[in-house]
Image 1 (cartoon, rainbow, N blue to C red):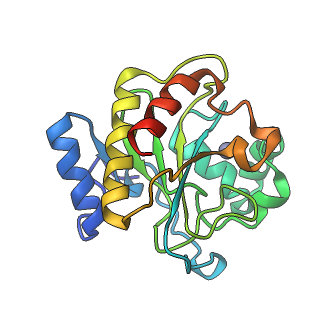
Image 2 (image 1 turned 90 degrees about the horizontal axis):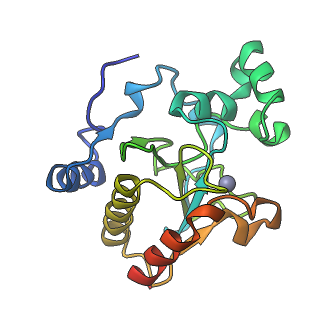
Image 3 (image 1 turned 30 degrees about the horizontal axis):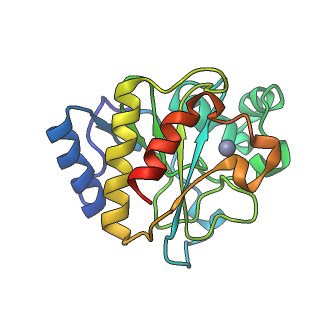
Length: 201
Ligand SMILES: [Zn+2]
């Protein structure tokens, strides 16, 4: 577990995000700030389709990036399997995950955490992970809105991703649009999600 630090310095996207962060007074943290488990690259699919979507999620009861990673990587050990069994995530899917399934996570303080490398397809929307960047808000937003700094951080991150990957207009999705059972994700933040859609339409 490293001390808080910026997202990997050698990634041009990360550098960009760090620049945005400086300008906009939010911060970014590299994967190494919360995890020291290497990703199992042999067990992940490379992203082969140009990125064209960003799907927004919330993580529910898991409010810290490490908890989310542990749930997604339940095959790492019995303890995490136990945790997983108690969670709302689909156990079968979790077994296939060799890393956290989202590319980015944003907490209530507006800190953006690096998740899975964008070199690899995420594991966040069953059957629709190619070309689809996964961004999760840490916490449960079924009934409440995002914090204002969290919203601002998301806006900056989405703008950055749009510029970097030349994402087409209307690239924002929510998990519920792919899977009706997930319709509660971000329901409380509907107004803010709509603002983001309006901005990036
Ligand atoms: Zn989701």
